[in-house]
Image (cartoon, rainbow over all chains, first blue to last red; front, side, top):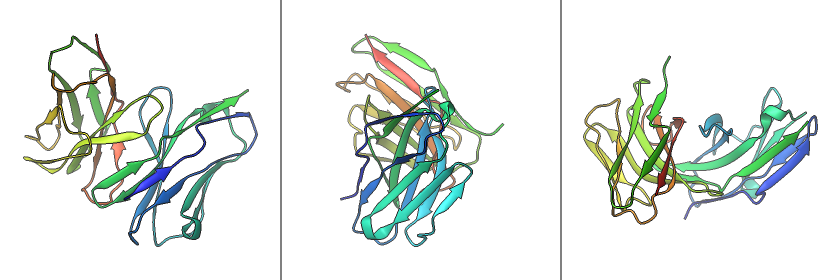
Length: 112
Length: 113
C-alpha cells in the first residue's frame, strides 16, 4: 500500500528563519512520482514541484529547495529565509499511475 | 486565462437534499478529478475521469456521483446518501491520467445545515 507521512502537523517560525518540512513515503513500486503543493488560506492547491523516482538530484528554485533521498524514502522541502507570505499548509503527495496519495499536510506559520 | 473554475465557492445544503458542484477547465486536459478535504487531513479521491464518458471510483465514492459529458466539465453530485458531506471539495485536472501533474481549482466549501 502507498502512504505518505508528514509528521510535523504545525511549524511556527519567525521571518527570515530557514525551515524544513519533512515528507516520508512508502511504496513497493520502483516507478513513482513525488509532489509538493502549497495551500494558502484561499484554499486552492498550488503546484510547487514534481519529481520522478529515477531522479534523485536535489532541486533549488529561488528560496525553495527539495532533498530527495530514496535510501530513506524521504522528500523534504526547505524554505530559506522564510517570509510571511510562505504561511500556508504544505502537502506532500505520492503518485503511481492513477493512484495519488496525499500526506495530512504541515501548517507553516511565519511570524513577522 | 487558462485554468480551473469551481462554483459556487460556498454552498449550504439541508439534510436530505442532493447538490451539484461545478468544475470547468479550459486547459484542454483529458483527465479530471474530485477530492474531498476534511479539517487537518489530506485530500482523498472521490472520482476521476481520464476521458469523456468514462469515470472511475476513488477511495470514497459512496454517496457521490459524477458525469463527464464534455471534456471541459466534470460536475460532482453529493447525494443524500452521503452521511457526512460537510467538507471542502477540490477539483483537479491533468493533461492525461497516469502520472501527469494535477492542477487544482479554488475549491467549494459545502456545509450541511
